[in-house]
Length: 511
Image (tube, rainbow, N blue to C red; front, top):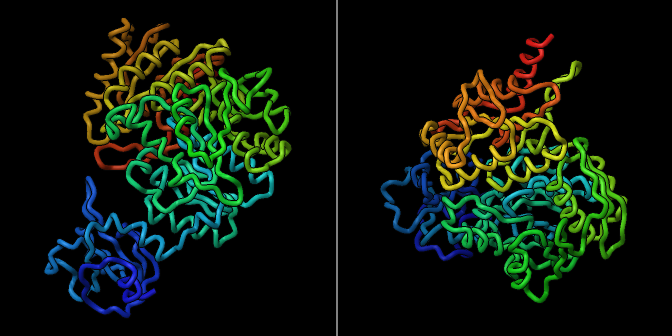
């Protein structure tokens, strides 16, 4: 496509430069500009893409697309430029011009909910692989298909990146894409022009209220995925898979379009897909799955009732897509763990505490993870913090959840971002004070008490040192992340690597 053809397809207010220039791609990230790419300047909360026009042009951009009110004298000299009113509104048109509608060439499965998205996505990827179906994954941990995997800067990519990835996946032979869908992406219009075959709702609890304002607004953002604008089906009729155990399930089911087939699942309130005779251990789960497609045994390596619920969700989606029980069983058996989701950190040889790293960063997630561990009747040491520049209201709630589900708690920093870490910890401590939790020094742990260690590395060492060989240490909040955000800087930091070193120190002290 050249600039002239693009001008003919968009409501361009004005243009300057060479209309015959060829355009090879489109991006709104100046760092991703390749020779011939159209760079779209977007104004955001923190950055203005117009500040990066010179960089994009230096990188070889084929043309620049800017807001109609942008002063021409601030353009790079000689830059071919298109002026439009509100470039962000033109993103769906640009995606369609460069990539077509790739979701029409794929079976696209969208997973939304506060907790469980990543685990269900990994389970589904394993199931479709076991069924021999080429499947791609877009989610919190990675964007991948086949042997190629990219780190995921966002749970759901920006609109242009999403369409580029879907286009690439389709060209490379993918038939199905399993995709985590965030409330931010739905609220900000990142999914415009995308068609889903199946939408899955896992649950809803307090999170992201710094962005959405209220829990109702948060739910409304999630519910958009189940509208006819997105849920249109494909080779299979559109399905909505809904967790009946969640209090919002009824409200979501009531608003489904008539063309959408509902499928429900649940552990406590029944549904189309249920688990009978569940057995939960530290080695995983087993149960007999009952469904309209038949009943069969399931067994997996993931820990806890919440992960059995996630397995039911994945099975419900797979059955709706015509996947056999055998492939579902094989997929569950193949998935040993999900990165940063109750991921065990172990050392070979002598017995050490069982260290589990988990992404639980909401009150509800922490409650469910600790509830998953409590039946094993082991002493539980929990380490957690709360992210900065995020919903402050959940900090005391997380504090209470951690203390009530643990024998000893270590409060530390998470990703403080631009907030003062001490203030974040003070907000956490306020919740502990309301329930009379006693504070102890880090080197003098007592049962049913907590301590404060702001440095996360040192906090992990303290938590593991406080544990005995039969105890469980839960390191919560960051999961798979291999960084810590302090200020606006991303510093290398991986809870799992730090925990391995701390376990080695634990072993040295106890020959």
